Image 1 (spheres, rainbow, N blue to C red):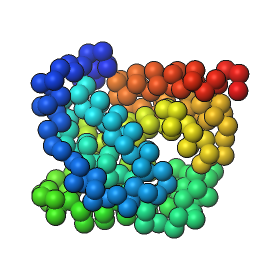
Image 2: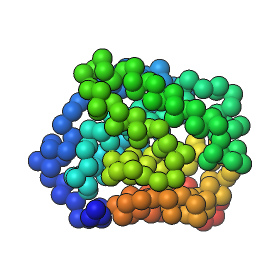
Image 3: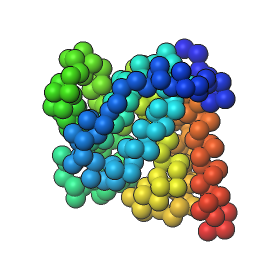
Image 4: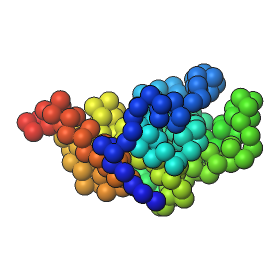
Length: 214
């Protein structure tokens, strides 16, 4: 797999049109309710935008699979015990908390419910659910599409909005959370472009949030 950097990408209108052909507004509308849980209505659109940027860098990926998977990946939080989302999902053992496995399973259920009615084939649905199932808990990526979804899911954390939300979930100050992003999350980025975007976004966020003095 050839991993390009952000600066290598052809972002011409023709390339963008080739990679991002399908209007997903009907799918966004179908899961509006699921977007109102755990900050999904902030997290998912930002992650979606990063996913689209990554798709332009890696045209060998199936952009539609990536876009649909990132759109649906966290919808399952709407079907778990909301009182446990922060206490278990962001606790000491948050990476392997039962509620994280559960939200992945529920997300797959939602994908199987909404996608066929919008015209997506059974094979396409399986490709999407294979990514959703394990996006937080599985240690390895299975495909370039899986990798782009994983990176997009993490990239939002480096934005000011992501830092604001996540520092509260983890009970940290923005400064402490930014330090965690550098030591724990940056090494998790899979693609060269994802890492480049994360570093650039984090530097911008740290400047805006006055991390050096606060």
